[in-house]
Amino acid sequence: RTAARAARGPRWQKRLPWRGAARRSPRVTLHALALVLASALLHAWWSVAIKDSRDPLAFNLLQLVAPVGLLALIAPCVTWSEIPVPVWRLIAATGVWHGLYFYWMSRAFEHGDLTLVYPIARSTPAFLPLISVPLLGESISPGAACGIAIVVAGIWLVGAGAGLSRAAFASPATRFALLTLAAGVAYSLTDKLAMTQLGAAPWSSAIPRAFAYAVLLGISGGAVFAPLALVRTRGRILERIHLADLGRASFASVVSYLGYALVLAALETTPVSYVVAVRQTSVLFALGLGMLWLHETPGRPRVWGAVATVVGVGLIAGFG
Image: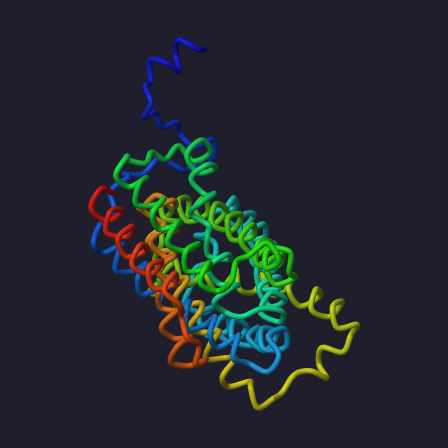
């Protein structure tokens, strides 16, 4: 076994153990890059909208109305039997992680500023390659690995400008942000497996498979998030909801599903480590939106962190 591993060399890729899932080319196309960058902008706007709401937990609960409506609209246009059975199982699994992601992110925004919570929660690429390379058989070129490292360093440098001291790391905001980060790693891997299999399956609907999948995971994630919100508020979550926020929350929800559908489309052909790393440019967009919308004043570390993130994305795109 040792000799066989040595013969494969340092850039070995093993075939996925799941049926219908084959390894993909590690190239990052301009089309995939554009999809992920657009998704990053939409995700940043969505996060700022949650932070700017009167009650992040209640606002996220209102967002569950949109996926139900979207599912009703697309249901007649999709041949649901074309979704493989293993993908349905992954949808159930990723619903758990997405539900926890929404819940922990809401709790983090209840306790901390956007510029503190967001860089930590979006540090997924620091940990994702450690799992995706041995689990999914993806390979990462040295240049792209350097780019991923720079992206992560830039994100944490942005966070340093928000006061990441020892006391900050002990705060509830930081703890919930780290839990949000863990959930992000888990759902990224699960969704990569699902989209690899779904991308290889026949698809006759005019509705993009990535969008249909995003709506389904919204339903499954909501089924996990809603009970958690109910328990957290001791059954009084409905009292905290402001119906005037329904329109804004529904719009934010549609934006989030559209943005994640773009990521899912990129995951069909692009390694998850690259996709998640490039998507972290949402930190840049959140920084700008935080200045314009939330009237935050970034310090020099956050500016340099933003520059580092751009440099890292350029390396990922150039050495993909």
